[in-house]
Every structure is written in C-alpha cells, then in structure tokens.
Amino acid sequence: MADGGRGIRRIAINTGGGDAPGLNGVIRAATLAALNEGWEVLGIRRGYMGVLEPEVDGEAGVFPLNAHAVRGIAHLGGTILGTTTRGNPFGLEVRQPDGTWGKVDRSDEIIEAFQRLEIDALIAIGGDGSLNIAHALHRKGLPVIGVPKTIDNDLRATDVTFGFQTAVEVATDAIGRLHSTAEAHQRVMVVQVMGRHTGWIAVESGIAGGADVILIPEIPYHLDRIAEKVRERDQHGRRFSIVVAAEGASPAGGQPSYVDASGRYGGIADRLAEEIEILTGKETRPLVLGHIQRGGSPIAYDRNLAMRFGAAAVRCIKEGSLGTMVALQGAHVRAVPLAEAISEIKRVPLDDDMVVSARQLGISFGD
Image 1 (cartoon, helix red, strand yellow):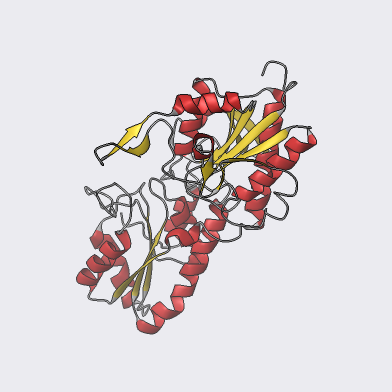
Image 2 (tube, helix red, strand yellow):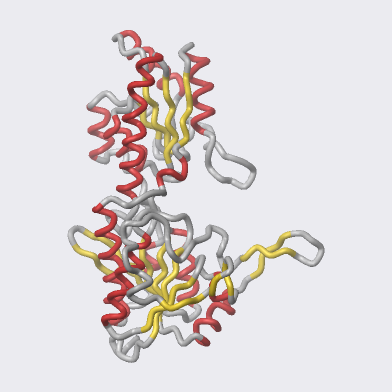
C-alpha cells in the first residue's frame, strides 16, 4: 500500500497450524486497533477454509469481528477463529471420484475470494508452515502481514514467540511434580515434550524442572551415556532420575521416533523408557505431555506479547509495510520481510548459555 494505509477499509484475520496460548490475545488486539482506525474487521474460520466454504462447522466461514466479539478473550486458550493443520490451499486434500484422496491447488480461489470480499489486507497468525503459505499467497498478490505463532520458539527472525513461555511453564510444572513419585518408587521417568526440530522447550523446562538428562534434536544422544548418568546418581544415593526428551531428539547415527508412516514425531518416551530399563535394570516409566502444552490460559508474558504483536500488525498495515512479519527483537517489535522470517529455523546453539549452564550443573545431554 503505497498510500501508507490510506484507503484501507476492511482487513481480515486468520489463525493456522497448531494452536498456542495467546492466539486470542493477537485477535483481540488486532481487532481493537483496526476498529480504532475506522476499519472493518473480518474473522476467517479455520485458516483459509472460511473463504473457500460458505459454512465451516455449521457457522459462517467469514464473519465480522467487533468489540463485542473479542471482549474478554485475551485470557482464553485456543482461538475463537478455529485452526487446522490441513488447510494448505496450495495442496488441499480432497476425495477423488474413485474414492481415493488427492491434493488440489485452490490458491487462486483464495485470491479471488479476498477480492470479492474487498479485503485490503490479511493478518495471518501462524508458525513456519502457515507463514510459508502466507508468503506464497502474498507473492500471488494477497496483501499479508504475518504474526509468528509457535510454542516451539523456532522462528529465527523473532527473539521469542508467544505461547512458548506458557508451554515451558506447563512442562516445568509437570517435571517438578514427577520428582516425588519418581523418588518414592526409585524409578526413572522419561518426559516427552514438544519440539520436532528444536529443543527450546526441553532445555528451558528441563533446567527449571530439575531434570538429570535433557535430550534435544540438536545434540544426538548415546544410550550408554544416559545409562551412565542414571547409574552415577544411584551410586550417590539418588535412586531416581528424570529424563526430559524433545519429541524430535534422535540417537547418534539413528532417526527420530515417529508415531506412524505419516512422519509425525512421537514415541520417543516409550522407546527410551524400554531401552533405559534394559540397560540399567531400573523400572522406567514414560510420560507424554502432548497437547497439554498447547492448552489452557496463557501466562501474562504471552498475553502481553500476543497483544503487542496484534497491535504492531495493524501499524504495519497502516504504514503500508506488507509482505512482512512482526517480530520481537530486543525490546522492540519490528517488521521483517516474510521471506527472511521463514528462511531458517532457530535451533538451540551448542554454545548457548542455557546449554553451557546446564552442563555446569551436571545435567547430561546424552553426548
């Protein structure tokens, strides 16, 4: 928008990919900020499905967002717009006439629908997958502002993403609660946390929760090193151990654990528990935290960050800074090009202060 946002009448907001605590905070802030500019705001249900289908789950696919619609939602988990991990318009799954499933590109329909609805800009809230879709649509002519959302905290362009700290709090609380039961039964407990490609949740919750072993995708682990740590604790009278494993962690020279042939990560807790018990002879139990890390009310930090991101997205539209993503860099929220934002995953550096500090505390990374 070369006119610096003048002429904006109507914007839309959608949420895509996995949910995260704080999504409703972004929706609320963006809606109120846009309304204060005199713009209309539309909500799109379940990613882009709302503009492709007149009804989604029995409700209008696209509907007005006003002050009443976003009242009292910032503390709520989930998203009032709904979301999906299977809503890529460049490859939507559809049932073919012969009954098999195939994929079809409906991205042109998205562009046409936005033009028909006279939407001047879209605020797309999502993680790396959703932002890749938003970037591709922007290249086809859709005016887009991205808002980073991933509890994995794996987008390099932003120092932190909303939802991450809430997920760390949930995982830390669970790990802390396991100490008493692990000690009572002299067991090894293996806690699986989210983190397909990065170990940010595992590192931060593992240290805060007092884990003895932390396994992350960035550091391939050796089973004998894990067993060595467990035996070492036994020799010092600490006859229980807590192992925290990111779902995407893998053994040296091996592959991560997958739930099924679809490539979904999962199963590392069960796999490790069995292997550790065989090696050490100690009773070992797995615990998968799963989607509980995504649920519930966001902590204050994530609420505030989410609302800052939502307000910043509206500023970007007003200033004509389209094809960008809002990002926290230092103390400020800035706009960065979407292409740059999605270009690289933010992994845990091996010399990161958290990793170095953990090693000084005697925590093993299985290497």
